[in-house]
Image (cartoon, rainbow, N blue to C red; front, side):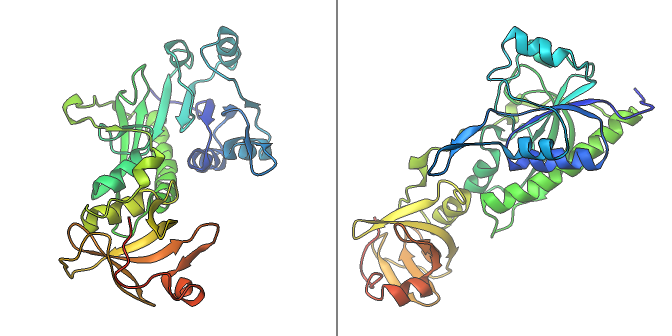
Length: 317
């Protein structure tokens, strides 16, 4: 189908990932009738209500903001239907869209998803890709259905995962790529060139929500596995270990080529270059870490303030 003008849009999203995509739509001058986002949440020491990044961006551009507790409520559905939007675009919204909502926009609902579907459906696709050691990920623009990221694929952009990528850095890359991929898909939609492709269920994997206990380091794992764990859980919940009953949060590491027969967790060597730890296979060098109630620092800076803390032959557990 061809459009003489850009389709009218309802946008639904909540965090920074979605904000990047919303701002791209605004800059491209798509008519955004309203923005849906999660309800404000208490944050900080004072537990004051904090508006989501998407809400803040929408209000700054004078776009109506709607924050229903659920979209299963008939009143909320009627409010959405009244906009008579051509299309609903969803990016990391955080609420389930029931079939009644999916059917409201004339062209349905499309989702900007942070993986190359059908790989990594679900809540944590970016982190699971890093943790598993995938060489690439990307963005899939998907026609939404009632399943969990099971709808037809409309457009994809590939993004390589570099050895130094954390979930945080990859998130930022994919947010930018997601904006580009969405605008490309909308252009194809206007031209009538958007072709839907079914997902191969045999290739589907599920990206479970992150749990804090996953971030506990097991030094009997390989250096490569632990290094991926450190990158996958940065910026949350941060990989951690224990030394002298102190929790150390590990922010950056590098896998060394040397090997060792020392007991996993043993501190092999420490200097300004880093802290070398024996693992179940190989040696991992810690570059950046965080002591309890302190800032993230390089090992060199920690040595300056705590010269005896990281002695050789101590063990991390």
